[in-house]
Image (cartoon, one colour):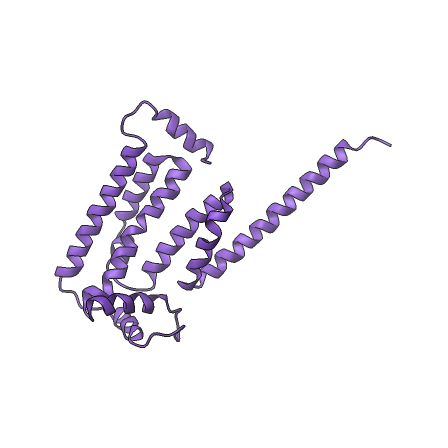
Length: 215
């Protein structure tokens, strides 16, 4: 189910050949080319690890369920990458490059669901053009997996509100390992359910009272 505004965008572009699959294809080309560029940049530009990256890399050499100041996801990702590619700066940063770039597709999906596929393409492009995304797709800190999972959770939460509950419940839960904000998301989601249930109960009570015959 898409929003009325998304239906308006799709209807306005119905006769335009550069719609639907074309915008999806453009988005894939955008993300694919950007990913290739960032991989080459990370592999061949000699940049030493920043202190936070070195700190998390040290964690990855002693994998655990948690650390002094952070959950374990960042160490797990670095540990997986370095176990395959060796302890190099490129291997440490590879998860950030992948998550920071592929996370743009979540932005496309969410914007496309809300406002149409053309808006999804521009949302991905404008997000990629921000300095924040460029930095997060190069430096392996907690922010790369956090934002990837957060954007995915926003998309899944929107689909949940549209009615696709069975397809999104598990995805929303999986991101909580990445950062404490997963708890906040779950709390906000629970409050939304309670509020929605209360509104429906009040509406049902008003309807029942209005339908009751006058004494």
